[in-house]
Length: 405
Image 1 (spheres, rainbow, N blue to C red):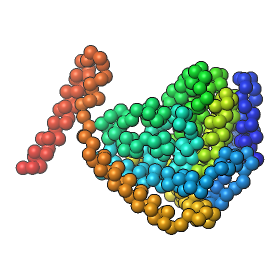
Image 2: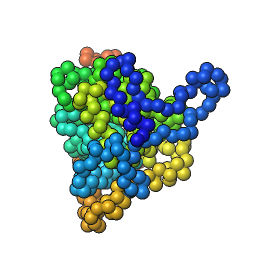
Image 3: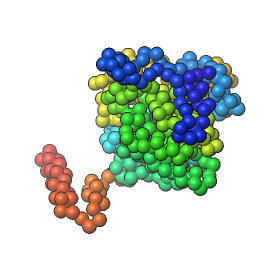
Image 4: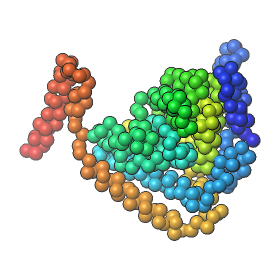
């Protein structure tokens, strides 16, 4: 039994109740200068893991029941989800490098956290993502090509959130946790037995919006799961620059349980998220899930991670690749043959071609649309900025003309 699961069995019934997990003391509790200067404890807390990096199944009495009935076909489905999501993500990255997209936020390395948690949701649950939850969008039935319009600058989202109970991508860091909490409070008042899940990263955990969402959800016993993908880096800031304790332990101070799961273990993420969502539906309030994973690529395509982290760190995490470990399990413990993997490879290439064709068929962005809806009745400063931008755009035409001569 893990440290987290011991605490998780204590549902939050009131703001005064003791919940959460045991662990090392937070920095500065002794009040001495020496204690404040100490680094966070080197002893890593235990985490829920059902599938090791080598693809070996680990027994866990607390969470095994949530995946006990999973079939081989469903395991293959999880593998397919991760492979296709990674292929889509790679194609989007390439399209940005070729000038077809303005920006892209890759999920490379976080497929298990997203697919495992996404497949744990029910159709009537509601999802509030950040801008990186491409795998969750896949699980919710959002066409991946619909994710790209915003990154090309031709729309503000690209899908109807209520069609899939999957909210539009949120660019403002951490604000979606408040949206999720308010929505969860609303469905609770409506008497629905559905749940809400809000995604955010380790960087967003430092935002005030997240702390406010924790407070409101705890006090009002909102049926919401806070799913934090701790990918170790908030752009160029490592996690240890943001917190003195493991992120999941922050839930203790707000009065609800937290649990850390191996974010590269799709079975573990599926089981823990199912547990947290079922707990929410029973009226037992919020849960913080910390999926301990790694961002294999750049924060976005405008970022260069080689400037702030070492290659050996990435190499160590490549050995924990979420797709490779599930493939090892399928090959060693099921009758999955090479034909399945070959067919999936062909399907992934077809997906890549479709994504490329759809994006290239999209219209070019309207460069002046940004000025149109800033004020209802217009504004002199906006008019001035529009004129300056028009002159800037015209300067490129002059250069092209000169080069043509």
